[in-house]
Length: 94
Length: 486
Image (cartoon, rainbow over all chains, first blue to last red; front, side):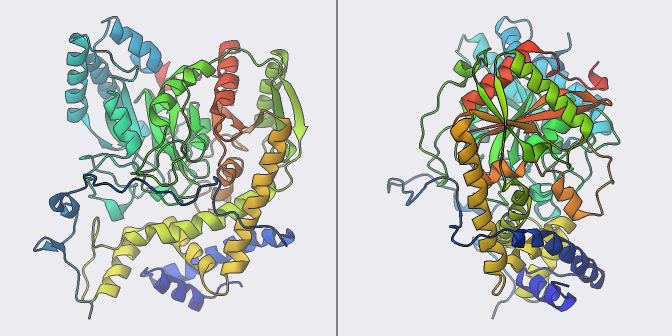
């Protein structure tokens, strides 16, 4: 087994996902099936190969530093589940 | 006249000659949608009133004698992960069940500017993760050629809408085949431009380095007209390429004499169904008759592409989907503290496959696994890209089946995430390499469509248009109609 149920629990916490007991069990099984499949990459020797994060040779993409119209506060808040005094409202953090 | 089987350029001519108004055309489409939609279920949201208002506005502009784009007044649709100002955009996810974007995706805005009429937003696999549109957070979509079969995915709703005559063309997104595989399954043209050619601004992306906005169309001329509108640099997308955009209509050339077409042996192996392979070989024979030179080419790293794609796409998804946290938009499940609120909102708002990919990606990026999975996958990406570079030294384009098999039945692969993933095994390599790729319909096998895939060098969409146009002019196998339109 490449990932245990305890590790799935930890990954779920890092991913901010609440899982039911059933989900923990089924994800442990399906993630192991996927990781078994991904094992095939180990057949391939990649020593000395540069990793490719991107396909185009883009570098330092800038645009002119000038004022552009953006969303106003009302539009930005229009989809907020909860707002107060022109700000997004969140549950108590500290 | 069956207005919903005609191509965009044909409809545009009819409107130009005042034989039909945009309002009449839009009503025709909306009525057809209400007749067939209970069988197809292509749309998450319909925009009837807005569509009719826009159609009337186009008719007024035409009556004033304004010069209009060929897309003006044409009923269109878009995958529900492309932001449309004032129109609900859910990504087929419960976590965005009520999200109304305050702006248009650049590409959607360009089509709107050209006067295209959005009739609705299409169903898809949730956040574009899937190969069958069964992973939608709302409902499954049916294949217009067989209501018990899947339309493909992730863009199954948009492909089905075009195939079933519910939209004259549609926008979709392709990060691993999300346009090409459903296009093949539904018997329409599906096109993914070169990475960076069409703006990704306003696309609710799950895989930034692989995904592109592209289109579903009924013929090659329509494809050229739409690429003319959607390609080009956008300041709002830092991954947008600064290259000149040609007039793609100039590539609609009925001639492939001397064109060198590579046939990667790895795509014609044991994975592919013999009847699909036979159909693809018919297309190869046709192209040879027309003067193209078709030869086998080796791409030894292609077999590793799906595994590398699985890791890279999940890693990017785990990071991209962190923004859905119940604070700025969409679902919030209330809780006493913020951590529990995040976990409950995301646990309830995301569907099964989305949660699996977020966890797989988080796992692949975590300490101790980063080198073994993520960096390994990026190295394999280099090798896949080099396979393409080498093939394009000798060949102008590559031809393969789009999918190893014709559409599977709804439910057939639902319990097996790896089998589901691998149903797009032939479309994923082009995303890793960033090259333009197209699926073109080529006949039926047991009543179900077969797709040919063509891939070319970066920014050489012209060659794909040329090959597709030549085939379209030389055979009727590229024009398929489901029973409900006959």
